[in-house]
Image 1 (tube, rainbow over the protein chains, first blue to last red):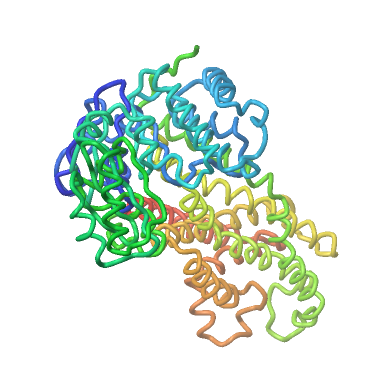
Image 2: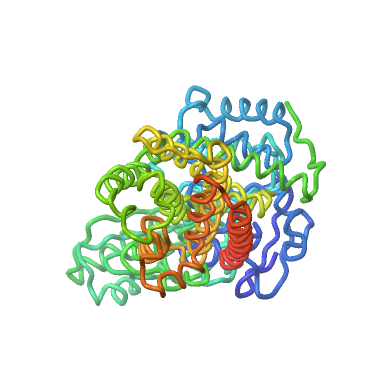
Length: 312
Length: 272
């Protein structure tokens, strides 16, 4: 599968493959090409062995697709939505009805089966989206930012469903997300995407263990221009980055390095709000490969227009 | 556990028909759940029918006014039926915009849903809505005292003309919606086109009493074709040549607009 600026990855059958990156990294573009919504200018992409560009009809029968927006019809009931999806895939009325009941039960929507979807909460509509994409037992499922906009409880429920399904239905799942926890929680393998290319890939554990030592994270009381040079004087700390009032670094022995960092900051008269030590997270992996924090990018996206998303 | 039958029907004509039925069913269910929508669409035409029918009842006495036998209400009824069909269908593209906005369109496009069936379904929905509204307008006219010598065949031609007119403008509206993808643009275009089309026809006035250029323009106006066919069929001594000729023009235009709409649909997909 190749797209964008040499975005190249292969997802093995029956696994969850995560594309992790900030908005505008090209994740959605990749999914749109793979799901036949957009045509790629060059390169090749194959889904379940079918070339996307030349056999789109075959690909569409093979895949399920959950986009960032809900694909549910608000003026229909959940059952009607599911029956229509199944029958468009060529299922008989009976098979579609049985499958719809099975999915509604599995997603805990049985009681709401005959309610109009416009009365559904965001979390319920999202679960119905998942059910819709699964009606015809797709071999490949695309989940494009499946939990964006959901509250934490609904997000947890969707995660549980995805984990259950991939176990039970032997599907290959391509998941895009800018939530690190989501990638960590669901993906068997990950590719970290930045500006249209893959900057790192592997299992979440491989990626994390590629970073030696502990993550040191210090929140200053306020941003200070002297912080980078001061912190770098502390022995045992490396890979130091400072963004506004947040200082991050790595240390082979974090418990030993942290007091030295704090002492150096105090000596320079820079007040500290909090300090934490952690095992490496995917955010650290992301930071290491792109020089930016994914969380900070996500914050910045709220304010800045997504200029890089024109391709989408 | 059940199994999905692995698509015995390829994307052939049987799939087109089956998918058209499935997708039109979705439109009609939605329509049935919003009867207020159909009713609100009727308020304006019924007011016109009753208000204009009273206000301008004397125009049929003007020298040179043709088709005036049977009173102004009989003259006006086909005009108001076509106006209802025109105004409702000019908004038809909104259903596409809602599907695009919601994400339903993308889900359909990544499924095996037949593309032609997606277009046909919206047209069927519009046709059914037009049928219901046209019947109500005719019924109100009859209740208000209008009598139609053309009888049931005349009403049948009126309904057919209204449906064809609705197909012409709903396909155009769908194309505008898919090409611009903006509700504001669709509203602007609808408002700029529907009123002139309405008044550049004999919907409310005999064009023989209007300036010559209006008649010339009206000759190319699908609204005028529909009004002419319906009025001829509803009146006494129907000239079926006139009726069929105008229905044919409408059908040909509807087909052309349908093809335009399918092209717009393709272009939408390519830009998706």
